[in-house]
Image 1 (cartoon, rainbow, N blue to C red):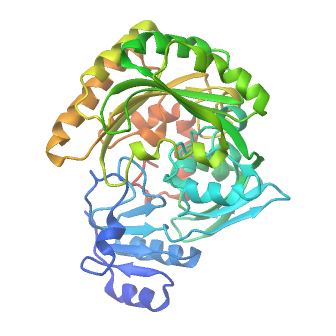
Image 2 (cartoon, rainbow, N blue to C red):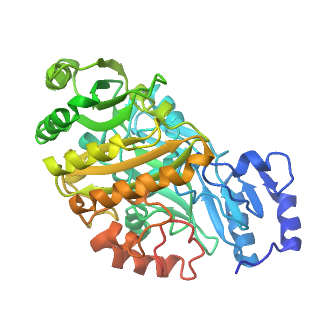
Image 3 (cartoon, rainbow, N blue to C red):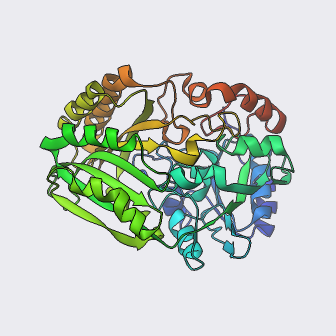
Length: 454
């Protein structure tokens, strides 16, 4: 059972709090409690909209002393809705938008409420980039703490692999500067261990010189899906680190709902080499649409945004697959043909390059094998169709289970997973994560996440 707000402490906090403290009925409360996934409908007892680290410390203290559940909102993009607590204290970092680029050191310090669109806009001014989300409205915090799959994973690794430091507010209210040299055990855990260890008020990343990429979309009629996905499998078996290619069974974004099989690409190498490397993708088969060209790096991060609009209803299920063999391809095509929403897609994300050459135990992220992640991403807008869409996603996941590896990307886990889902996601790193959780959060104050129980 949850406790209740300590009214005296709340009054004391209100006198010094730099941000806003919102309760039900207050102006701004309804908007602040909403997250990207419109399926999530929770009402915190208090929303603490923080402007700085001191606000976070006080909000954590209030929740701890009141016995209330804590949720932490960065970008609010997590599909499971863990950014919002029902009846507890929501620590909202979305106003903490500072981004400071050091172009000489090639580092970037960003606040816990920054999204990748905002991050990329600032780094682009200096011709720099780091691996970020494939949807620009995603927050840097949640994505990085869970690993951070993105377009540059082949060349520069995951977002977590580019982390330099984190300012962290612990369950005890301490403020720690966490680096490879200071609190190295915690630094290891934060690179993939999610929000289990505290509230990350800011992050510092390594950035890399990058202004332009060659990228975009190649789409074929869905009737060609089997041939296109076989080609994709064979093509990605030997792609260079500079080239990331994802595949998807999707619907045309023009509102027609026409089913397509699409390849989405990003090449971050020199222009001449990029054009040579992507040519086979452009010349295979008879595509219905080819939109591939040189573009600023930050543009490729927006290419999928329209497919995941804020407020749409979302339900996802995902796992790495052991092999993208013909039977797995056939099962995906069959399930896609039965999907009930023209906004829904099945996505295949290729892991390769630098992200797979880091040791399994070097960070908390254990997913270091080359291969593919499967994602059934259901998106719809009519609440009356919720049961139908969720049922399709679950059935699709069940039909794909014979092809799955024992690896799952923690950022895609939902709220209805098997009891061992988190342990399976961390594999050989789980035991060490439990030990670190016991050290920094023995009472599991931070539990509204992909929880590692102490």
